[in-house]
Length: 70
Image 1 (spheres, rainbow, N blue to C red):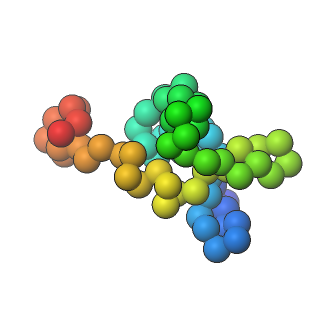
Image 2: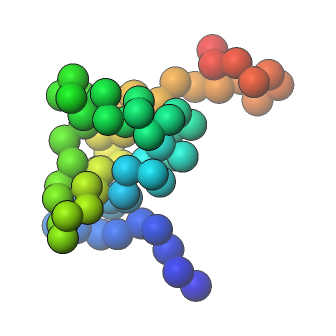
Image 3: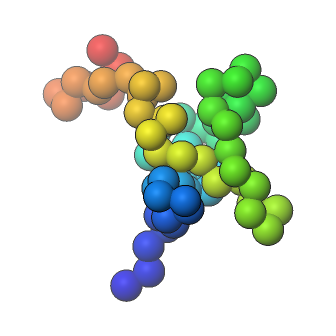
């Protein structure tokens, strides 16, 4: 079974596309958060890998009964 989560120096990291999927935002939002200094990707072999611990504070909780963020 393949996984999209990679362990890098003890941190769990994913690529830009999977980061966007986990946060339920667009890849452009991930790029903007990176430019704003909210996320700090590690670059491995030309791929930006984002630490999931940095992502958690940026994710807005969702009401499971609606499609809107709380």
